[in-house]
Amino acid sequence: MVNKTKIIIVLITTIHALLIKVYAQPASDSNRTSLTSTAHSITLTNTESTLITTKLSSRNFAYTTLLSGRRHSRPLNGSIRRRRPTTRRPLSMLQPDCDYGGCYPETGDLLIGREKNLYSNSTCGLKQPERYCIIGNTKNVSCNVCDIKVTNKSHTIENIVTKYGQDPRLTWWQAENDVEQVYIQLNLEAEFVFTHLIMKFRTFRPKGMIIEKSSDY
Image 1 (cartoon, rainbow, N blue to C red):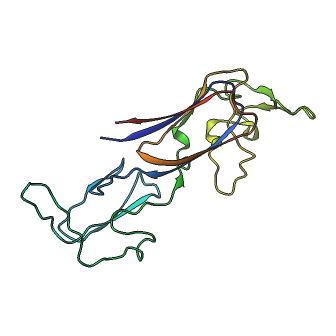
Image 2: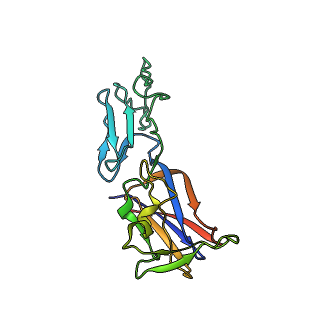
Image 3: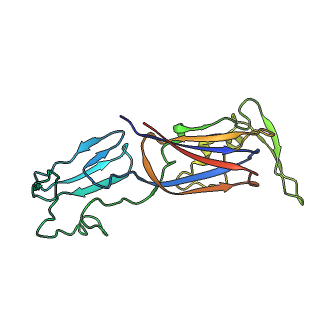
């Protein structure tokens, strides 16, 4: 069964340009007994002292889980009681700031490598070249043309992903003029724990905006 998480950003009014960064950690189970992702489904046993590292969806996210070498004892009531190992084995040599249990990996930008999982219902210059002007610039009116056939005038949804060494001010996504109910959708294909979301607008912010997160199983 595949866990999928989707983020849908609905913009009530017309939005001209947007740069988004999504930072998150992979979703984890508090018991650390089972790690499940799109690419891996591993159940950890307790018969040996085991160190397992698994990557989620071939991304640079990894869990490190250390299990004790002792078997579980079973009390009279039938429940399972976990014994802590007699000798503490610090994981600081393996990963800093780790005690018993799983270690949380560093956060990362979930947009990197997911350009093909981005969708938008409006893109400037997609059907034909379209002229636009920056609103709010009262002193010097700045107008330009967006056209997906021209590299420096193309503002497709993939442009919200900032590549390494690239100036984010030169690339952005832009919606069509006078179009409302614009939305952006990002499919993650796995379940993650979100830490924060950063959105940078090249022009004015919309009057209304909704951010939705869904989990499909």
